[in-house]
Length: 627
Image (cartoon, rainbow, N blue to C red; front, side):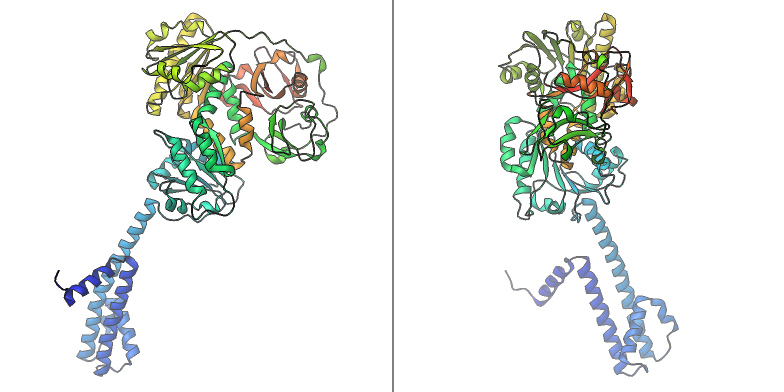
C-alpha cells in the first residue's frame, strides 16, 4: 500500500469529523464562522480601512453573518465594504448549512424517539416485559388500580415498533385516567434493553409469554436477565411471570427464587374451565374477584379478633366478607375450620371495596332468622357425560382436572379437527381414575357432525378455541358452533350446560345471542391475575389455594340448601346457614338476572349483610367449601 499524502490524511480527518454527528457539525461551523470573522476583521483593522477597534469589527462581522440584510446600511472605504461583503457571503453559506444540519439533527432525534431506544427515567412504575394480547387487559386493570396514585406510570418493553404499540394501546385502552404508558422497543432478554426501562427503580415487573413455540424458555431467560444482570439493584425485585408447562415450574422457581411469583397458565384456565362447565356463573365470580373495578381481596390485621374463632369473625363486618386467614407463619388457608382460633399476628383475608372499608361493624345482634335456615342432604355423586368440542394445548390438562371432580364411571368425548388428538390424549392421560375418554375426528362447525353426537345425552358441553388459528377466526368458529348447539337444545327441549372459550373479550357481546351458560375468556382471566399479583405479591398464595382442587374452592350451590325461599331475609342469615355446614358464604346469584350483563349476570359478591333479599327457586349461594 502506498504512503498516504497530506491531502489524503486531511480528507480522512475531515471524514472522521463529519461522521461524529450533529453536535460536531455545529461546533465545526462555529469554528469556521469565528475564523472567517476574525480573519477579515483583522485585515480591515490592520489596514485601517475603518475607524473601529478589532472587537467592534468582529461584532459587526458577527451581525452580518447572522443577518445578511445588516450590510444594507454600511458606508465607508472600499476595503471596509469589501470585508463586510466577504463576511456576509460567508454568513449566508454558514447559516444555510447550519439550518440544514439542525433540521437533519431534529429529524434524526425524532426517528430515534420513534424507534423507542431512549432510556426511561421513572421510579415506582410497573414494567411489562413482552407484547401479547394480554397487555391491553393488564394496562386497563393497572390504570384502575392506580387511579388514586400521584404519578402512575407503566413501561412496556416489546419487540414491536414503539409507535405501533402506542397506537394499539390507544385504540384498545382508551381510558387510562392519570396513568401514562411509555413504550420502548427491545428484547426482554437483552441486558442493554432491560437497562432502558429502569428496572432498578420499578415497583413491579410483569413478564409475559411470547406467542409461538416454547414460550416458557423465553420467560425463564428473561427472569435470568433480570435477577442476574450486572446492574441489578441490591434489594429484591417483585416479578410476576406466567408459565405454560408445569414441567418448567421447578426451573423457573430456581431462577426466580423468592423474587418471582409464578402463575401456571395452563392449569389455571383448565381448572376454571372444568369448574365452570359444572356450575354456570363461576367465571363471572372469578372475574369479580380478580378485576380492580369492584370489590377486591385484601389482608387485614384485626387485633380485636385475636382469641376469637374463624366462625365468629365471619359476621364481624357489614360491608366486607371474610374468606380465609393468613397465619403469622406465612400459611394461607381459605375457609379454615370454623373453630380455628385467631392468634396474635394472624390476618384475615377479606373481600372489600377498598382496604379502608374493612371496618368492624360493632353489631351485637345480627337479626339472623333461625327459622329460615335449611340444611339439605347432599345427593350421592352420579356419573356425568361431558363433551369437549375443539382442540388446543390445554385439552390433556382439562381432562386431568375434570377427573378430580366427576364421579366414577363418568365419560368424556372429545371431538376436534386435529388428527393427532387421540395420540396426544393417550400419551398425556393414561391414568384417569374416574372417567373414560373417547376421541372423534370431525369439524365442530359442521351441523352433520354435531347431530351425529347425540348431544342431548351429555350434561356438559365445553367449546375450546383452536390455538392453530388467528384469534378472530378461532372465535368465529366458536360462534358458529354455539349457534348450532343452541338450536339443537331448542329443538330437542333438552337442557345441557354450554361453556365456551373466547380469545377476544370484544366478541363476548356477539356470542351472547347464542345464550351460552358461561364464557371463559382465558387471556382476560390470566391478565387479571397477573395485574393483581403485581400490586400485591401475597395474593398469589390466595389464588393458589382458591384454584387448587385440594382443600376449599368456590362453589355456587342451590339456595334451598341454606335458607327458605320467597321471604325477605338478610345475608347474615345466609352466612350463619353456611357456617353451620362448615362453609363460608361470600355472595349469591339471582337466576332472573343471569342473562343481564348490566347486573353482572346475576352475580353479587360481598353483599351488604344487613340489607334484606328475597331468594327464589333456582338462585344460588356463592360459598367457599371443600366440596
